[in-house]
Image (cartoon, rainbow, N blue to C red; front, top):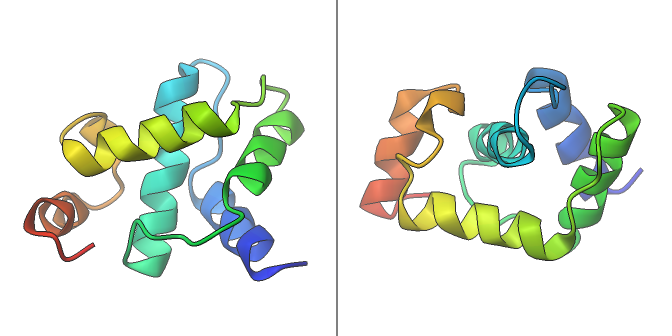
Length: 100
């Protein structure tokens, strides 16, 4: 298992994709969980494919890499976007201040 696979597995354990949420809401949950674990939105190369596979394992349609990158960019530009899915409000402040 690669480091990125392990990161996504841990994030999905903390914030699994749920069938009653939209794809964007589920992506936000996983991205916020990954930020919570790593302390940064700079996950490095190779994070999109494990997230897509996690959605498939949850029985949901896998988001494309473009959709994943766009959602992460939206959270970076405006971390209040989908803030209801953030596990720790301090993370929103970290993104706003440029610390994450």
